[in-house]
Image (cartoon, rainbow, N blue to C red):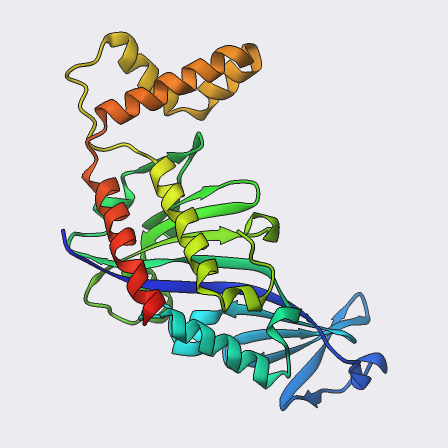
Length: 300
């Protein structure tokens, strides 16, 4: 199986303190221009709550002393989020935003972030995404557009894991026909506490931050349960029962509630059993693709 990898910092939410905006402090009911961008008042229950603006594809929200920037960093810089987006381009995108609004990277806080990779593979993406079963005993749910199923998503309390057919998504949303089988794997962080030492845009300018994000993604793939390609020929009936019980997250939750100490031993046995019987080419290929190719993006 051959593959090519591209880096993605996609949806992002940034928050920056700014100097007082006079029009905002005066509750202007008329549109006004700030840093060359037209801002319009947004009303809630008859009163102005903030002002909205647009810079390229980025959504801007302005209050008296604060600027909120959101949307895809990749699309901002490249016009799409399926092409190559390497480390030097990430830095250029950050620099452009900071210059445009007179911001200092260390003072712009990262509140949400989606990070991942696009992988070009030589098989239909469906064959990969159907193998994603669960992560930390939480099942992957199907991602759909109307009746079209195009991916899997696992929701946790403060982040989510997504894997999907980017070719299908681009065709659905943008009406652009891509020719290659493009798979997206990404982490979506809704709470900045879960980001690995990434607090501001200054941190994203450090390639070690991208490396930490990458290592998180690798760790997630390693811990993900894939349902395909298990060899049960040398297992007992009790082991098979244990393995299939482990695929249902309620099993572990129930054991944890009834006997917390025994649960530790059950988890240990499940881990050893999975390692022994797993013969999963999909997981191995994804790990190898990610490990082999990400360094090229950091150095380009």
